[in-house]
Image (cartoon, rainbow, N blue to C red):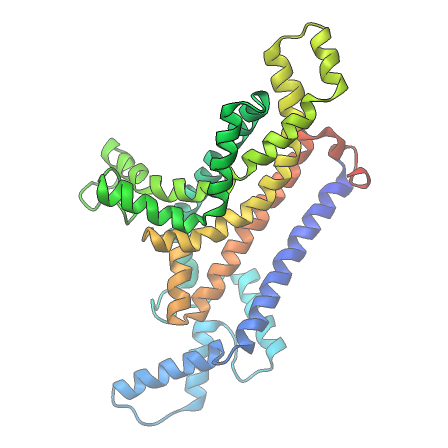
Length: 340
């Protein structure tokens, strides 16, 4: 892989991350009732609740700095420098206002659960879309092709959270096949044992199925790519050479049809992680998405900002890794960035 290509992609990833943090920080502080003002009000209300009537402004600013890692009496660019420095050099995202715990600890406790359902949703969604799209192309204009097209267009028209609500109603409430909330049953013992693993899978099944709907839209793209490849001249030559059908399907049709899908897959990474905010709230699945949703509801700005940074970091890293592996899928990328 060309060094310039790697350096360019790495630079773009860092720039994206810094730009997102900067923009989010400025927007949060530009909103009515900025993080520091909101925190001051919370502290003052707590003092009023305990009977305290004297307001010490210096002590109030120290408490705000303790939670947010910024000095509230400083200009905005200095506050941003203080906040960004604490992230880079101390890995400190501040303290949650309502949980009263370090934001970093709260987020890293839940990241594995969000990664679990997000990664499996992507794998399930895109694997199904590739298989269904390829079969539709090989059976073009058949009844299977027509019915599948109608079903996929219908699924693409329905938001994933509606699918989630329908899954809860039918499979959790009516049939009682799956639990409709939580990430593990309280009746099983935590550890490396079958009941605990089974409980994790059963609780994650419906959120994964709901989020995988995002990837099924790729089936129509896969069908279109496959139909286009099937009409290429080199494919007729391969058939005339007497190559096996399985080899033509995998090495000639599949590989060339999947290339545009890989780009869509990279873009879809951000969509899947962002969808976790709504899906985890619907299924009461205690991941980072639900943590972020609760932070929005309670205006817990340190936690909200920290969750956004973690979501952005995970998405940027995932896209960066996918970007690097693109060269293995399409050797033309490895030839150099100028020929992309």
